[in-house]
Length: 621
Ligand code: ADP
Image (cartoon, rainbow, N blue to C red; front, side, top):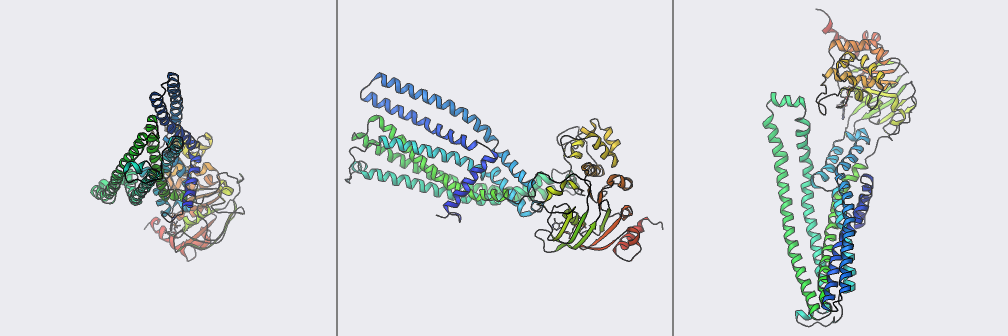
């Protein structure tokens, strides 16, 4: 039987895969849940069984010893099981509290490990929003699987216990195959049981159908909900939490625009979806109540008639009534929950799609720690994922160990793309890039990671201490951090911080944290690159946020900063090219000129054009 285009077998495979997934982020939890369900479902049956034994005994032989022993045994067993259940429940609650954070950590780990090009992909970001939204907004996906497992386990145990009790006490004496016209006659015949079975199946089928209907509505609401959340998070967490936008909100009176956007695109449609969900589930609750009243009534009649004709003892009336109603509840719970699980696979599939995304490289770094880097780029072509145009076309370049190279060119000419490929953040579309004969690719990063460090213009710093930021680690070599800070000209400033290297950056978690200017932050980012001490040092517009003095200071210290490392330097200030051994000029994704500053400045071409355009600003009129 297909559901949502999947066979029962396929659905079962997703459900079991999800259950195995719990072993990764909540180990042992499902096993505990299984044991807990068995115990909690057994407890009410002890009471029911004991009551029936007592009533039977009172109505027949009235032996005190039997009464005392059965009551004491039931109390003792209930007590032991309740204590064990409470103990397990405590552990389950602790584990359950970890469900949401552990789920989020699992997704974050995946986000960190996946190929960089995927992390930039809009569709993957949407998928992540949906997976997080599944559990956080509607408790679906791994959340529903968890709760449904508990209900399924309980339903299974309850069904098994009630079937065993019924098999032992159903009271088939006096049952006939004859069909007399009276209600009493029907109920007292085999037909009475058949009607009961039909009622049970109808209840289960109706419940399962209702569950499906509710799911369809809530899944529809959920799909749109992920979009609403993105809007809400964009304004709440990104735009309004950012100092720069807070400034623009005031200067350009954006308040009403934002309120209207959030209301119309997020809260109003969200509230409408919420109402649809509530309407669907209250209709379902009404129908379920009616069904349970009808089945309950029928079971009373069935058991009552059997007691009247003497096929069951007075004490067994309660036992059988309870066993039948609990069996009905177990079967309808099972049917509803199983339907819910099959529907929930829509969410689980998204979760599996996300956690199965291709990863970049194994975290174990295997590159040798040697101080040598030569680079060879051969006929590289590159298109960004999803883009039709080539950002790089037939780029070839060789850089010897220790050489200092400048890459220049207009905005959009492909400079940053080229260095991102050298770092292995994207895979080339055609051609090869090699560092020390090791092919650069996102799958191979562990082999060359230690050799390369890059400082990009759009870097981010953590709200941690100066030392943690520069070393990117909890423990750091203080002398090496001070040396890196000195090279970028920040030593005096950091020496004045009360906690020096332990001073927190930003005030997010520490009231005494220091706020940095754009230029200071950029210097910290460069110091972070210096600290890594890799043999290939890439600086992409590292001085863009610096004032002319600081920029000059960095340029003059360039040799000291890059020492004997192979260095690639991207800068719009062509003045910096004077310090480099070779200048590569890029235009529209291609290398159009290669030479030293002195060679290129005197020949007609892109470089001299750019140089002359900049020089005008410096020549006195
Ligand atoms: P430069 O660093 O020289 O300013 P880039 O390498 O950043 O140039 O960009 C080269 C080309 O690639 C541009 O046309 C730009 O629009 C495009 N591009 C850059 N980043 C992306 C991206 N993430 N996705 C799609 N296209 C991009």
